[in-house]
Image (cartoon, rainbow over all chains, first blue to last red; front, side, top):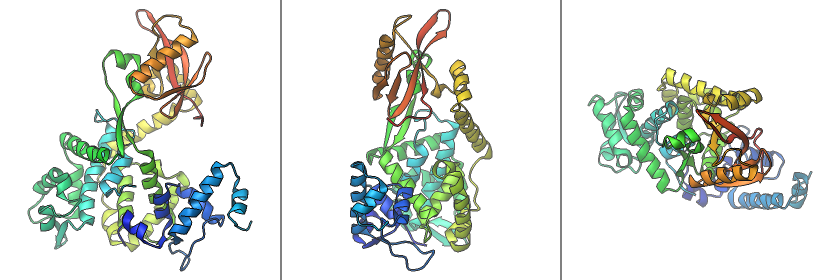
Length: 87
Length: 335
C-alpha cells in the first residue's frame, strides 16, 4: 500500500489513475467513468482488476475538449464523432 | 490546486455546512474524528516509534521535524501524549484518547484547523440564513456556518470515490479517510446506497490485504448516543423535505427552523414588490447573494445558489407581524 502522490509528483508523471484525473481536472468520478466506458478516454490496464492508467497530458486535453464541446451544446454521440471515437 | 494534508482534507468535508459559532452535537462528532485524524496523519508521516506493539512519539516528531507533526497541531498532540503512558500506547489508545478530548480542547482544535483552511483559501465563514429570521434577528442571535470551497471539496470527495469504487490499489490516505467517514457517520454523504455495498466489500478486501486497514478498521471511537442523535436530526431534515413535511413545517416552523425562515416586512399588508424588496434588504445586509428568479405572489428567490419560495405569511404574537416565509424549493430547480 502506498501513500497518496503529491500534486508535483502527479504533474511530473506520464501516467495517472482515474482518481488523479479527478483531482487534476475537477471533473466528477462518475463522469470520467462514463467517458471511459464510452471509449472516449483511452487507458491502459496491465491485467483485469488492476488500476487503469491514463496518459496524463493526452487525457487532460481530451477531457477539456469534451467539456468545450459539451458547453457548445453537442450531445454525447456528436462529441464522440467530433473526437473521432467509433460509435 | 492545493495539496491538502489528511487532517485538512477530512476537515474540509466534516466542517462543511456546520455551525461555526456553536458546538452542536453534529459538529462534536466531526471534531472527535478531526482529532483522531491528527494522530493518523502523524502516524502516516512516521511520527511514531513502535516498540513491543506500542507507539511513542518519535524524536523527530518531538523536535518538530515532520511537516504535519506537532508543529501544526502541537498543543493537541502534546496533550494526548501527556495523558498516555510514558512507555507509549497502542494506536487505538492514541485514537480513543484523541476522541475523548474536552469540548474546550475540541474547540481549540477546530479553530486551528479552520484557520489553516481559511489561509489556504479552502474554507469561509458565512452567515446562516437563519440569522435573518425575525426571531433570531430581533434577539441578536448570530448564526454562522462554514462553507468549503466547492471545487476543492469536489476534488477530494470524487478522488476518494474513484479510488474506492475503482479496481486497483488504494492509498493509505484513502484507508484513513474511509475509517474517519465511518466513525463520523458521513459515509452516506459521499456514497449512494448502492455504492455503499461496494464500499463494504472493498473495506473487507482492504482488511485482508492491508496492515493499516487491519489495525484501523476494528477501532471504534464514536459515541453511539451522538451518532444516533445525528442520524435522528438527519432523518428530521429529510422528513421536512417531503411534501407533507414541508406543509407541516410551514405551519409549525419549530420542527426545522432552518427550512422555514420568516422575514418580516416593514408595513402590514405589503404588496408583492414591497415584500420582496424588504426580504432582499434583510438578506443582503447579512452578506447573502440574492437574485429574484420569478416575481408574483409567491416569488422564487435564489439565495447563495439555493432556490427558495417566498410565501406571504404572518406570525401571530400580540399583534400579527406580516412578512414572508422562505422555504427551499422542491425539487431544487437548476436555474
